[in-house]
Length: 269
Image (cartoon, rainbow, N blue to C red):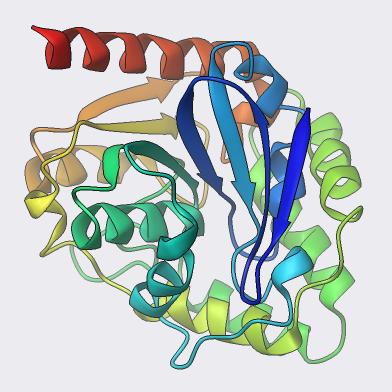
């Protein structure tokens, strides 16, 4: 049974039973990106998929300023108590912020193809600033074409790139288009947000999942993130790119399941 909740601010839908897992999507997307992946987990957990402010069924909501902190503030009231927050890409930034802001509510964090700072900087690998600038210029003429290019970059390197792109596109287009303002501000967020100085304060169990073939979150940054947050666990999937839950859903689900099992055992002991 699936429950949909459309508060005045944010849309979410919940299915399954058990401990709560909350999924947050990436830029330009919506919760539809997880539609095919969620069933891999709903036999054991209660899975909630959220449309971030400005995206999907939450396109009417736009916190100002549009920062990770304000997005987290908007989502916070929807979170179940003692939940695990799973954030993909941009959603991983929000997940980390939620862990910092709501330590009693968020019991664990899982990031997928995410990082505390997306844009490249001296001594920090990431997305080239000119790539994000080009997306901003393209948005002025066509969201669809910009999204298609972004999906192509996300899937680049994956052995199933064409199928991955088709799967994500079909899932997210079932939801309303994002607001132009959220798209623009979201790109600026990816260019400016930097959580490197605070992620070491995340005390909840944390799992960071990466794809070795990811061109947006290069694995050359993995060791640097480990240094900033040494208490987190890290898994690099050797054949995945930026959307491992699309290209390798069973493997991704098994990694999440193993992490949550170990976390529960540690908590019980």
